[in-house]
Image (tube, rainbow, N blue to C red):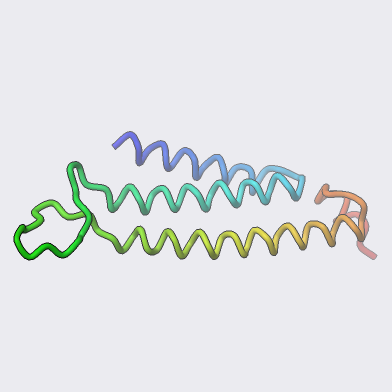
Length: 112
């Protein structure tokens, strides 16, 4: 139960970085932390004490099987988060080239 709470704390830290920080790089790091918290939650949901992998065995029955679906979802989510992180970093680099700053408040002042 404490692992679920720590997962929630990790998600809240990432959400705090996204909502309260003014630097674009820190916002990107906050998004990455949120993604990892969700991945950790999916893995925690599929965990079983003493669980075994769902491998076909004709001579033995597996009583306590681990669910492989959340693991596959996390692998897919890792690939998607890598692509979205690369896109966010590319956008941040273009913003820095244009405005010479990563500060959101200064970028808002430069409208016109």
